[in-house]
Amino acid sequence: MKICLNTKFIEGPFGGGMQFANFFYKKLKEKGFEVVNNLKDSDIDVIFHINPFPFLMESSSFSFLDAYVYKLKNPKTIIIQRVNECDERKNTNYINNLLYKTVKYSDHIIYIASWLEKLFSDKYKIMKDKSAGVVLNGADNNIFNFKNKDFWNDGKKIKIVTHHWGADYNKGHFIYKKLDDLLNLDEFKNNFEFTFIGNIPKNIEYKNIKIIKPLSGNRLADELKKHDIYLTASLNEPAGMHHIEGALCGLPLLYINSGALPEYCNNFGLEFNNDNFEKKLLEMKNNYNFWLEKIKNYNNTAEKMVDNYIKKILELKNKQKNIKRRKFFLSFIYRIYSKIYNFVWFFKKRYVK
Image (cartoon, rainbow, N blue to C red; front, side, top):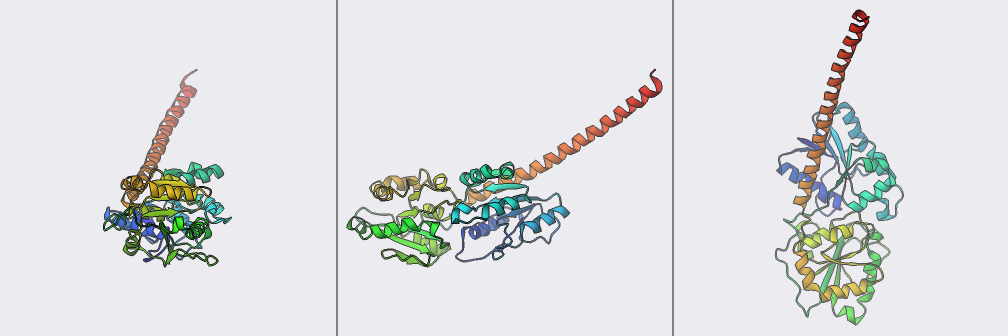
């Protein structure tokens, strides 16, 4: 089977979509699929939109319209669109409507979280009808794992960490600023440290937080493993990769009740909201060993994710074949029925009086 991914492949620190693209490409090749990222070949079985937007050509290798024109010439090809974004995430007002429009040119949708599926299904009937379900994100556990992890010992400060490529305020900076202020107080300063890896908004200044420039791959994993708790306060997160990478490195999760985070983080840490953050942070410290044992069973790996995508792709391709077989069978039955009907009608008209 030949699968076409509409993405360029960029190495180094980048957003979750590019991490997904690079790993997806690698694993599809390992599992025996032929993978391309352009529409030059005439025998593509599946076009898989990682990002269908034509204005994001920094990472996209072709647009949803290019894919649709290809399908008009090659109707056996199916187009699958991965939906991993929404307006609610960054307070924009065009992403949802644009996704709705691009979906008209796709055959099926796969969402990266149930929260995101419900969000769009409630707004757009076509996005409900074309849904092929949910596949959760996963991170590469060859990189993000417990290897060489130093675990917290009681008596030491607990090291908290988070990381975000995007510098949007909704990535959780209202909570990170709250923690920055809490670290002025002895109760928190004597028990916690906080490190932020990535890009921060230009209008925010932190006084008690260590800021590290964006990292990726093994360098990121090594830095995460130096910490004890993974904090995410990202609002309306469609899914994200950051908390997954932290969890696979053995860090219990302290996560805000927003977007897809409860679906991904439930049972692997403590949920908080804006009113009880301090309480939950102290509760995490007091029950750290309990949550440490829980996080050892976290299994949102990229290997599992790719297997689930392949399963979906094969199901959708087989579904297409079965529909064609049914149409052919019904067409065949109709032709036989028409011939019999015409014969009977002719026979009655000529011989029956």
